[in-house]
Image (cartoon, rainbow, N blue to C red; front, side, top):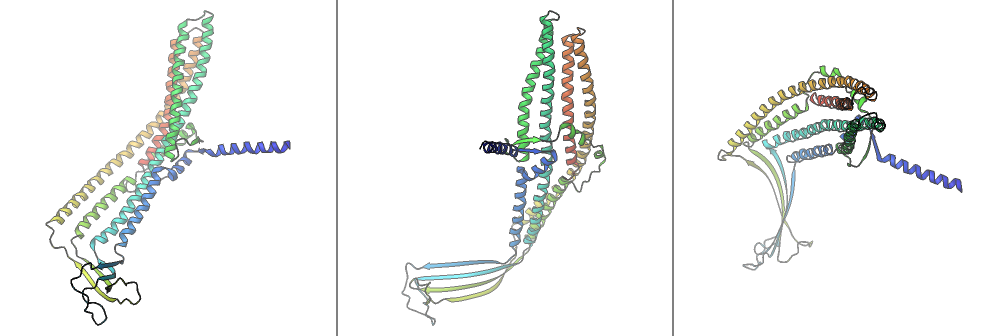
Length: 441
């Protein structure tokens, strides 16, 4: 029995541990990007927009397909001018029937309409716009996740460094306090260390709050609830090394494949089709139709009786509509469409120049981030050596607390620069990949 109870407790606690593990989402940066592309709010909306565009394309296509309409008219002559006494040879009252029903079906088929042909082309362009918008959204999502992921790692790394600094500083303060209590140093030395420690503790509290916010921002980028528990498997140091790629600086920029250029080109195509649409509005339209009607008259409401007699009619026809004069409205609309197309050409040329400059700027900033990262590593090592020397000198009575405080503040600054330089390498590489339109792996 005791073994049975033990087994139950073991299973119970294992279940709790398993559930807790399932609640934590562990992700590397690459996994976070893939996860966000599937779950990010903007990407979900982009998928819905593509589906809506497909439905819009089908809606436009159906305009040129056969259309069938049914119609039923019922009339009740509440007040009659004369009695229905005259009947035709089929037994139907020719005049004066109290009740009358006409039921008909009409089949129409568009034969030619210039605006319909343009509409089909526009629907395809609209679908392409939605697909390109999704591609643009995915690239933006990738960059947003990289930045959010990096900000979390920066907060965690900064907190780790600050906690380590606090332990060292607390130890120094305790030792200095003992020396002061023995009358071997001035009180100012103790107070100087207390000021530094107070500032450090305040930074720790602030960094902890920033870390919590960074996790929430990452959850939003991933498409999660802001309270979703996350565990990041990559480290800031490893990502900085992985994202240091000087070969990327030599990668050629391809304008035609860039998503922003393709979006601008598609915008021009949409305006070209708009101009074509306005011109085609001046063309004749031709449609054919077939109509079948059944008519019944009766002095009583007997239309659902099998004995009720119906007369039927049918016809086949064509309808030709020719625009003749519209007070020059069409000419004005065509001119407006021409101006919009000309504006598209101007914007397309502008985007060419901007994208080329953006690629060059991104390369320059990425190269600078790598250089700053290498410099920050060297400066951090130097600052650590200087701070350690000042500690030794301070406790040997060869330097003042002010000198030690300066060395400590210099160390803290270099630590911060080092952490930020790693984030900059990661973020600037993502920015360069977006500028070069490097596809998501």
